[in-house]
Length: 339
Image (cartoon, rainbow, N blue to C red; front, side):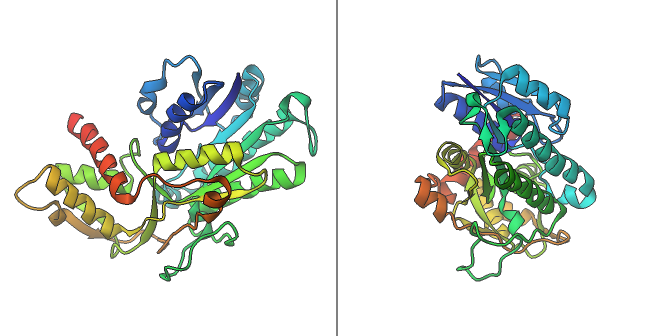
């Protein structure tokens, strides 16, 4: 049995990843370290809370004493690091929190891992030869793309973060990179596009559209609604993380994207059309769409070229946007209509 520390597992992506990972790998024990800030919710992990190979610890990744205790007490032999402050609007209001968690927290985790696993630079202790630190990041570190559909983020795209959130994630990526090149640590970084699916925090775009539509409230869309994102179904992302963690080359970065570029306006219109079919009202839900003042520094377009992980590791998204959004809407209808 091998014990893996998975940070931030009560959040959106982590809470989809943990049940998938426990089911697929009976040889792993999982420790979930999560501070349960606004985006973390243990209800997201109800299906595994009594699982014999799963343990939850409430705590801060910046708390070095706690992180050292976990490594020693449970003899951690792998880290998959989801924990992060991730809401751009919040980073504009309070950047310091993002620097503390995303930068200092990542440093604390990887530094404790290095000291637990390694005898000296480029030399692992005998019992920790196959230990890996996998850092989950975002495509936002690359900045904004033009409207040219042939322009995509690759692993070689220079970093150009434009928000305090993306700057903090770019910083954490650089820390992880440095521990590979300076100390010889076995690290992997994955940068993903916009995730969607079950268990996402209610404030995010797709849950907000569905929730407001069901309540008959205005559906707020920033600016002209033409900002473009590449949408990735969360379970497809989990499968990509799994592949990168187990088969990726040490020190490499892998971009994981859904190849589903949509404007925010396309997203809201499609969700309203599906709701019109599933829960019809006298007027279309589209009449609730309301344009609001744009977010400060709002990047225009993100899109990932996932060729590297597709070609080298054999990853491929199972869901297209149409299949994924229907599954997502069905999940939120069960949630919001039962609240």
